[in-house]
Amino acid sequence: MERAREVIPKSQYQETPVYLGATAGMRLLRIENEGLADNVLTAVTESLSKYSFNFQGARVISGREEGAYGWITINYLLGKFIKKSRWLNLMTNESDSQETYGALDLGGASTQITFVPQNQTVESPRNALYFRLYGKNYNVYTHSFLCYGKDQALLQKLAKDIQETDKILRDPCFNHGYNRVMNISNLQDSPCTKKYKKTLQFHQLQIQGTGNFQQCQQSIFQLFNTSNCPYSHCSFDRIFLPPLQGHFGAFSAYYYVMKFLNLTSEEPYSQEKVIDTVKEFCSRPWEELKRNFSKIHEKYLSEYCFSGTYIISLLQRAYHITPDFWKNIHFMGKIQNSDVGWTLGYMLNLTNKIPAEQPLSAPLSYSTYVFLMVLFSLILVAVVITSLFVFHQPSYFWKDAV
Image 1 (cartoon, helix red, strand yellow):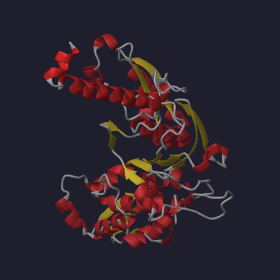
Image 2: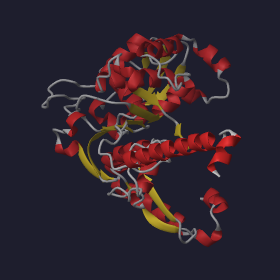
Image 3: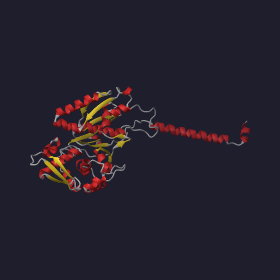
Image 4: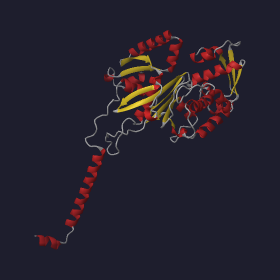
């Protein structure tokens, strides 16, 4: 807010709306303690109301909204909602607007997938969203997997793994030589780990890293129950998922983890390259990582092996992304210097900045404009040729003419 006060002129404070949307962390808190969640929103509202801006309120947005706003952000920044001609950027009335990108969002507590499926068919009503933007209808599929953000997924994996171990867990998702002590209560207090909760004879867990990608991935795969699908296609936990099509922008933790691993070039890396890179990182000794990445907090550094493996596993097992389709996944941090995330889509929706109908088109259609430009060019060429012919005649021509 202090930054906003610096860049926005004082005369526009009252005209500047401020919105606050809370996501999966608050959704989990509401499940665990609704009263505490309400108190947090009340405190935030009181704090933001003290500023001179036009505060519009704070609320917890749903997972469906979070997925939809991320999809809007990507396609708005990529210019997918408006088709422009290549001549003077004239608006056209062409019905074949550009194919939209899908959106893959990975946070700490949840993950979302949102895209327009082939034939715009969504079998499950709870996964269907309808938008009319710039005069075009979009039937969008979206789902938010609460508890499958990278942080909560790690807690789930640890809570699952301690069911068959004593107080020492040799974990392949942490680098060899890594040691960490966790309180069991930190694992069992999350709403996401309740299905693994049981009475244990110890109160602390010692994690010893062994650094093995294949074993780590097999452990992560157990988080996804892919049996008993009631639809034509499913993700996991009996959730409908249409076949993926088109290109996808993967952002938030998808991007930050891949950026750390140097896997975010403009041209997408192959699935094999990504797997080999994560596999090599997981195999590196912990002491070596600490020396090479001394400026990174040890907690975050220690979890990159799990996070990289989890991203690969999520895309492969939950979303059924094949090696051939992997080239359609683009890890995005910014588009045209704007951050990629759900927040821009949230603001665009609340402020009605995206019209339902196509803005007025230019006076001339693209085809008419091209025809007139060609006609004008031909007339211009004819005039030039005529002028050259007339003014380069011999002098006797002019005398005879007189």
